[in-house]
Image 1 (cartoon, rainbow, N blue to C red):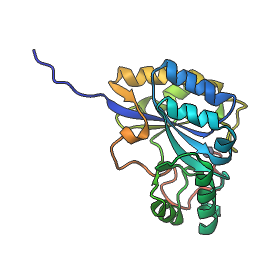
Image 2: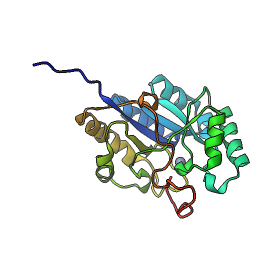
Image 3: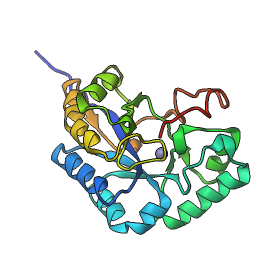
Image 4: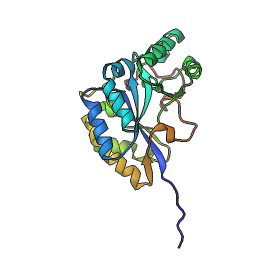
Length: 220
Ligand SMILES: [Zn+2]
């Protein structure tokens, strides 16, 4: 009997709102022990403050994207403010990045225009752990279980954003191992974003429209 070789389809774990001096090293440890690659969407002033964490991400094969300088919804920012936030943040990051995930995954027309001008791809997600809530890892795993499929982009956090209702990222740490095991049981492999084929989603899937329902969101 002949078995045709099929490479594992990639799944991307992504982490927003770091780097955090407490939680990011532990997330990196958990990824290393699971032999998993991921992508970190960093807050630029934090990246500047903790350059060794950025170096470690790069050294260990993870991707780095830009999240924000100030964690502001683009729906309440002017195009000039969005541009200034991006440009000042990119200047703080060591090295270049191709990816931009906006705060709350909110994208307005100006976001797309400014991203194109800077050669950046906007990145949303397909599966949301909602780890900012502080739920136990098992609950988060069941929340995203159906979405762990080829080319999924999973949203997690290695820092505490403005909407977080937890006081640390311990549950996220506990989720990494089981999530990686679940993906592998489905023949999937954890990869940085550049392993995923385009087109990638550019925004929060819960906010496909540009305006509706945005202001009440607590998502981080
Ligand atoms: Zn965020």
